[in-house]
Length: 153
Length: 315
Image (cartoon, rainbow over all chains, first blue to last red; front, side, top):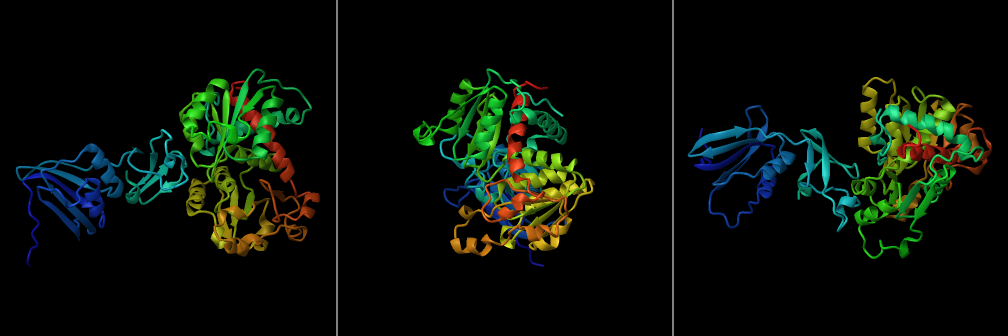
């Protein structure tokens, strides 16, 4: 069988076990638009996962993620594994947990929620109702949000 | 059960079942004073600030009556058009200003979550008097009080809720509270105004804990009427429909009249948060079933209980 090669990275981050279909959301969260890049980014979509399902993978050369970015990614892809690569070796590998409370990362989907009112000094705050799939409840209007991606701040 | 002194009552979910039971017990003791038959000057020298950012009749008048029956004072900003709100003041700033003038604050606001935000900006207790299509916990409490008064207990009874179950803010928190207390629920509405799935699921989750209740749904009121111990009727609100034609289609779907109630249990009580339009025939008012005006009165003793508890006049 002919193998499809995705360039290994020498230094950087591999975000593995992304919920299938969410790779582009992950790129958006980490601010990769395709412009102004000086290093390699590989996006692998819909490949078999060891657990029998499917997954997406994102590899970013010369980049380690900020904790805030990792927290946001767990809201669209709760099963991710982060591999930090240094000199072609996996220097660190972890499965970040979805936080119990989501503060200042997501806007409420309810347009009539007070947190969407201009000038009110309020940071959107959500309780995590379920982790996989991610379901959030607004602390203010109590509406539940099940597709977080369009509402990320 | 936690201490109610100083607490915010923003959502019915802020209260556990023991706390709800305590509030209802205290409310029962307030009934004679709420009727003016005895004096209970428990809140002499205390001030309630009403921040009403949208019109309200029953909620506002019953809070004022409740505070005054307990010998307290009420302040409010009168016409909204004369306030600093129209100059662009934020709700957060309005609350920070008003907290220095009062001991307890009631907020009614057209946007969901407003009362929670208000509570974040003051150390004084905040009561939600209705936030947009969101919560209205004192309405839920007075509904629970009315049912308890008439039925003795809530566990095991059947409450049939009919009308606009999608947009009606009072029925969502009422349904969840009733399911926690073990009442069985029947939701009757046109398909386009059905109870939101998350509310139905929240009720089912309560029943899974084994309190014996169950939930049924349908659109034909006649087929459910004979099982109802409580028939809770809501208005289908014209202002919620962007298209008048859509409103016309469902507007007169349900009309509770004497003939329909002839098929109900003799002990079935008919409740309505008011105002009603055409959904209950005025001839029903004369029957033993009709308790909606008593229900409206119950807003006073329930709010008296809550004010006295939050301000520490009663433990």
